Length: 170
Image (cartoon, rainbow, N blue to C red; front, side):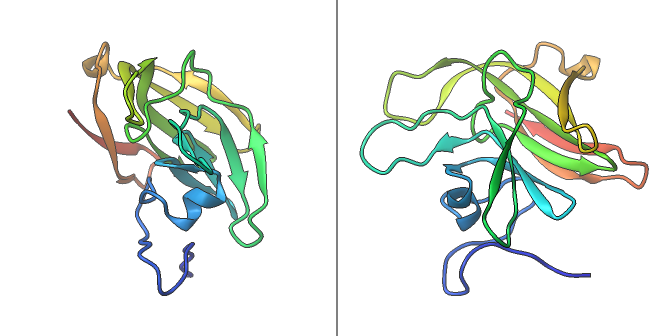
């Protein structure tokens, strides 16, 4: 077993499951912060978040995905998830289960007009990324979550039968 992490030994970075801390080295590597991450083989699949700006201004919400080689920093854009709008930064999480990655989060219905990084929350949605086919497919939510809005997901883990377990809260 080995442990991999991004950052420098003297920094404030910490390793977390599912989402990297704001402004961590992994986020800057992907050109975004408050993004979601999942391991795909020897690369990291990153989705969403806010773009990193070089100067003043309101960062845009990112709805794209990329595969990143943590050793070289090389990033390759992959097909975006099949959602009409990006997911609200900070509301979404991903997990690798077998040959797929599951992403769950809240759609951005409308960007807030103030100086925050947020958006008006829409419905909760989920998608599955096929590692083999390198493509996304929207997946249905359990009936208990139908029509849910403004929830934040936290990854609890993946079972031995590749079921992804999330905790959702408002």
